[in-house]
Figure 1 (cartoon, helix red, strand yellow):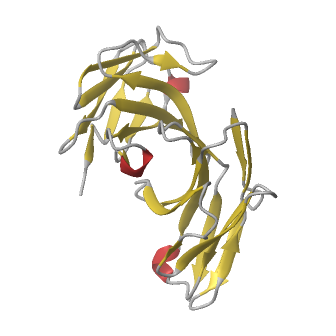
Figure 2 (figure 1 turned 30 degrees about the horizontal axis):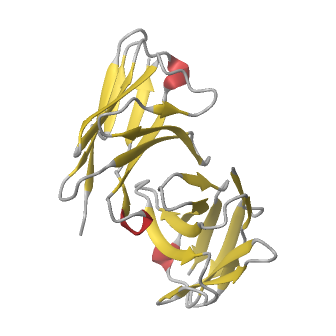
Amino acid sequence: AQTVTQSQPEMSVQEAETVTLSCTYDTSESDYYLFWYKQPPSRQMILVIRQEAYKQQNATENRFSVNFQKAAKSFSLKISDSQLGDAAMYFCAGGTSYGKLTFGQGTILTVHP
Amino acid sequence: GAVVSQHPSWVICKSGTSVKIECRSLDFQATTMFWYRQFPKQSLMLMATSNEGSKATYEQGVEKDKFLINHASLTLSTLTVTSAHPEDSSFYICSARDTGGIEKLFFGSGTQLSVL
């Protein structure tokens, strides 16, 4: 069983600034994956970044990076140089290689020009 | 890249009718598909998991007789909402996993169901 918790219902950031979205999780699995998905108004789920739990190195994808603290069961997303197009609902999710995901409650990110 | 096609994008139906939603993998074989439900500004909640050629596995609290899932081929899974009622109005999203594992997990574009 897995639980994912996002404690920030809403966040805002100025364009070009940096923002961090928080996520904590709990799982009984030894081998698992963690994700950040972006859901814009179109509601298409867009994979932002994926982290394999067995990898100690934090994943990065261009302006997006994570801070994976395995012992603390924390998985935060940092967005650098925020752009207007980053505005969306962001979901933290966890799952095993089977593909069944558990999602957090989501964080609405607003980017101010 | 791999694409998962979900149809229709939106559907409006009368209470008591049935609605079928299709999720199709276009360029890969989807051994496993997942169906989620999302209410406005809320999270995605897993409804069921389907494996090709097998009966779907439903999450606790999901009525399997109301939400019929068929995964008859490696490229197509369908969700049929039977005798739909206004409380079934929601956004339904599928995801499909290739044989390559979770690195090849893709989402459909979703279906907005509105039951009048």
